[in-house]
Image 1 (cartoon, rainbow, N blue to C red):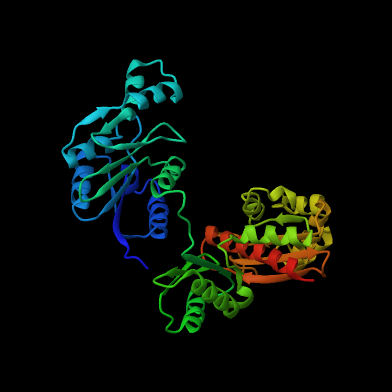
Image 2 (spheres, rainbow, N blue to C red):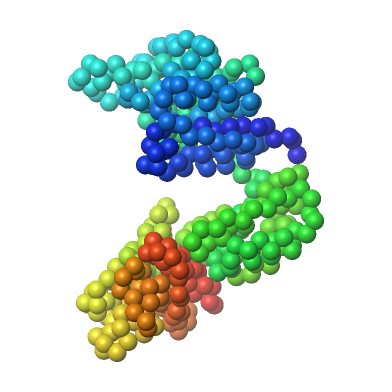
Length: 407
């Protein structure tokens, strides 16, 4: 394997350093750089200050062969990354006529001359920079060779940044040297130990384990191995993880469920109480879901459970809304939406509403299917309301996956 090239990432924005907005750009850029042979050794967030940005750039371009900066290239008063780069490199700014023309053509109309002038600031390049034309938005990127380093300036909005990252790194690059095995129903430590037991002292394969509520990713990456060795390791580790491993190609749980439904010829439906539509949302976030997802009902009140899902009032009276019996009745009722496999959730997400018998975190998840008799399972999820709902959503999707696997 070739030696990795050290790199640094800078995210610009006062909103980032004050905690007003989450920095997602660092993760996206770092992942893209790793796949294409770089090793990100340092990441920094700085406010919208010419001095702060220039000092950071100056230090990093003297240290790393590649420095990628996102943010601060727009038309507003606090978009000062261009000026900071010019100061850091001791170069003048130059107005690029082709960019100015494109901005006048594509940019929004302005009645205020000052607003128009600010918009045209985006046509200014650091002397010697190669522009990256925007495919989304109006701010171009810039690639600046410094002699010992390459400084890349990219816009901050992720939708504008992503195509420029691909343009800079080249369309031929892909994630061939990473394998991601996705799991549910196993702890982070158990997944790590199972993977390490398979790998043993295998040279050239790196391992990391990433966890979010309910989900665990086992990531294998190239440290000298070839693609066949990575594939073999991924296959063996997936076998060791068993049914907890739902994806070996990086597909999300929702993508996996939809793929299974297509292969079995099923149509899916959801009946949700405590998750409030999050299961349906996860499925419909996947393009093309409409071919196998019939629809869903958010049945928060008992009246809706009865009127739209056909849950008998006697079931609710005898067992309550959060119960095995109600979950099963909800799932069965969801089949009436034109589905052949359905999932239901009902629980106590908190922070209030719990009782000694039905505490916060108690969730029942049930499935009903043409393949088998309906089943339900009780869960006791930890965490706050957000965590309980996230875990319930993941386990509901997994319940669908497992129901579809029944012959």
